[in-house]
Image (cartoon, rainbow, N blue to C red; front, side, top):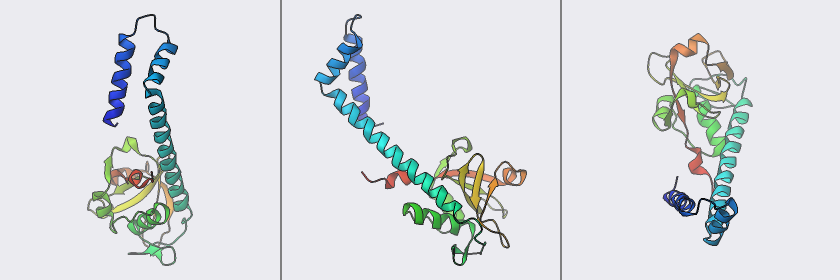
Length: 187
């Protein structure tokens, strides 16, 4: 939260505290309006709401775009629908096509360059990592919600949605990460 918002809140709190006990909500609102603080607070509120909507829309677009690739075959080193995807190539292509962000090529590099989050904080569009090759962060997928993720699993398979609560994935779960898409939001 920006410091000036905190200062605004402190001013409001001290004004409310310094006001007589009988001050009505209308008196406080009038005071804030006279000082120009009400307008500033509304501007901040609208700006934050607009940014939240943009981020939510981009996240939804990301998941919808990823779902459009269900059935594309796995291909080791693959990074396109035309030739097939491996796990990290799939994630990289989805982020590049949907939000214009180019992630590193390998799953372990994607894990290293994204924000660590707790599994309980997962939101659609976050990345989920697994140890499927006896090394950390050897597999990656995109969380789609409700305990499920979409990924390009292995040779002979296709892009699909799976449940992270299955014992296979639970045993191999390595962590969750969030891609800082918010920083790409235009002002």
